[in-house]
Image 1 (cartoon, helix red, strand yellow):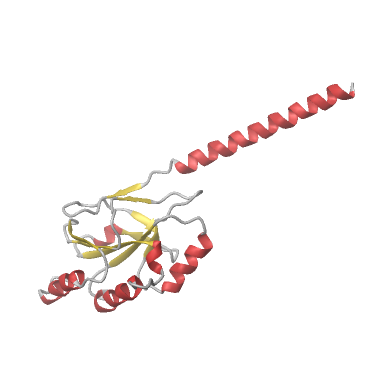
Image 2 (spheres, one colour):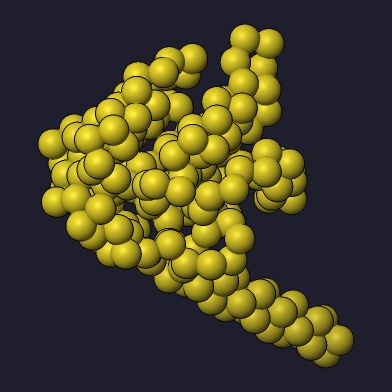
Length: 189
């Protein structure tokens, strides 16, 4: 009789465990089905309006930039740390210093991160003064934006009609700043 109760009890525990795992799997699938925003940022594209949570807790809404030129910087999280050959943060801060009062700017941080606290520390330590969107992905984290930027760091300029008119890739160049400066001199910003 004890064996029957032991077997029945074991079966009950296994059944409950399987059901609870099934509920967790269904919940995870539901969370992962959240629609991503497709963000086309190639020259000639007109990205759809989107909103996304910024790293400072605020919400970025691209519709607020309608009728204006605006800049998007896309980079892999690895660029948050200075390397022996390139300091992307210093380069970006210089562009921000020279133009952020003239043109809205946004940073999208891409890449893989399986250590959220370390990523948040990297972002905080970079002290970039414009809105940033954490677009990294990891084991339990989906990217909120599905962008088509394959080369970073990317510097993207969107015109008042919402069309991407410049998408430059790579660092240690002044092309983007020269483009912004020419818009300032032409009183377009």
